[in-house]
Every structure is written in C-alpha cells, then in structure tokens.
Length: 403
Ligand code: EZ4
Ligand code: CO
Image (cartoon, rainbow, N blue to C red; front, side, top):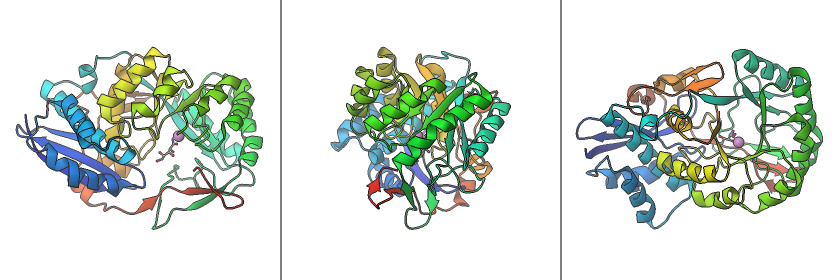
C-alpha cells in the first residue's frame, strides 16, 4: 500500500481551505485538512515543495513512522506551518487506514467511549439584546452549550461579533489585515453584565462559554474569572496570550472559573506544563493545528492523567475534513469535554461532501470506512484562492495588542 500521488488543493468556497489528498497504488485515497487561517499558501508550499516529494513510494500504513519522519526527520520541528502540514499527512493516512480496514477511524483508535459528541454553538450580538436573541435561537435548535460574545460599548469592532447578521468570519479578503481598537478596561467593565443577562433570561440549565481571545494580563483574567463565578461559566477561553505557560498559575490562584486554552498550540511542548501543573481545565488543540490524529491523541492522553478534558477548536477555518476527523477522536477518547461547532456554509459543504451529522445539540461521526469526508476536486476548482488576513488589534493609543 504505497503512496503514488500527493495533491495539494487550495480552494475558496466562501473562505480559503488547503486540503491534502493522498492516493495509494491500490487506489485508496485519503484527505487531510492543511488550512492555516491567513497563512494558507505557506502550508501549501511546505507540503508541495518539501513534504509531498518525500511521500511518494512510502508505505501508507506506516502512520507513526511517517509522523516521526516528518517531525524528527526535518530537524526544524514544531511551529504552526510545519505542524499543520504534518497533520494533513497524518489525517490522510488515518483515512486510508480506515478505508483499508473497512472501518470508521474511531474504531481504529479504541472504539466509542460515548454515543455522540456534545458541541457548543456561537451566539454573537452587536448588543446584549441581540446576543440574547441568538442564545435563545441556539437553545431552540437543541444546543446544550452556547458561547456568548457581544459588542463592547465604546469599541467599534470586537472579536466574535460580525458586522451585520452574517455568521462570524474573522478573516477578511484584501491585501492588508483590518485593524481594530481594543480597551481592556471597557471590556472588563461590560462583560460580566452580558453573562448576568444570559443567566437571568435563560437560567442555568445549559453550558455557557466565553472567549476572551488572548487580550488580558493574568491579573486582569483573574478579575474576570472571579466576576464570572456567579454565572457558572463552563469555561473562560484564552484569557491571556498563550506563550507563557506559568502565567496561568496566577489566574488559577484567584478563581474557580474553568480555563480553556490551546487553539494556537501545535505541539505537546506548548502545553505540557499547563497540563502537568493542572493550570487549565480544557485543552483546545485540534487535529489540523495539533499535529494530526496521532499527536493530538498523545496530548489528550497526557491531559487525561491530570484531569484536563478536551475542548477542540472548531471554527469555520477548520475545514469539514478537520471536523470529520475531530469527531472520530472526540467520540473515542476517555476525557472528552466538548467540541466547538460553527456550521460551514452550503458552498463549503458542497465542496467537502461528508456524512457526519448534527442533531439535538450533538454531532455524530461518520460510520463509513475512513473519515467519511472527501473533497470534490471539480467543485473546488471553481473557487480560486482569495488573499485574506485575520485582523490586527491596537490599543486606543495605537500600541499593537494581541488580537
Ligand atoms: O479566532 O479560528 O474559538 N474560536 C476562535 C476562532 C479563531 C479563528 C482563528 O483562525 O477563537 O474564532
Ligand atoms: Co477561541
């Protein structure tokens, strides 16, 4: 079962995606998501120019060895571009192995630990009443967990809040990133009142989540965590920038609000201290940016030893190929917590035919052999790449800040 062809497919069905497709000499195909939002072509080049040529002639069944070959064998390890490329290869190889075995991938990694995957949806409003309306519609649709974000009075553009009523999509087409202005003081004075309004209107019988998106210092995060305690958040996500693992200790010393971190991590070395010192409650690494199914399972197994549960990133820049793969992991690991879910657009879904499904606040992985997702290459070719960037953030005095 040798790899005979490796294709890198870049397409923009409403947003950019990079997909790796591997083909074996016995005619099996496997797909892997290789999308890195705003830096897509760097991964496409890493794959095309440096990885794909090494794959031709390799035994597709040797998943672990291929992972190690691309990681240890590259000398230059880790980093989002590299790890996203390695993840795409790994994911495609698991897809092929599942097809060769005639089993869905979750069966190959231990079988089901649960019936289905609990997901959280996004409620985003420019104002508190608009956010409340969206929380209400998600609860009506059956969601058991909702992330709430709202515009902050006095700030023009805020992370998580779309302009108009379109679903939120932070990457904006153009040859320069959009700029936003941020004030931590304005945010901290406002956001507890958003949580209060949600609980007052809808009660406590569902999980409430919030993403602070890397903007606070540890002591500011501690203050927010404390202020949020009466509203029983399921988690406060990314309270501070993610590099300084010991920075989380200070937050921990002050609040019982659970902390979720890791959507920008790509290696176990980014989070081993957070996990082993029990400084977080949920690890947000995902298949595409966390080194594929092989590496993500290693991270999740470490997390399980320390009572840290999973809460994988699942925004729309993670393609249906990543979501399909995520569901196989989610349904199998013992320490699953929750899965983020932002439905893709119809155009995106048409390019990536899949058989996972949503019902009653739960996602069900595909029962087909492999991952149960593919890329329709003809459809993909109709949507050429469009340059787009994630925004940048400045303080009111013009200083650069984390977005
Ligand atoms: O900003 O996926 O929790 N979800 C998030 C996302 C990320 C984008 C970045 O590509 O924080 O909205
Ligand atoms: Co986030």
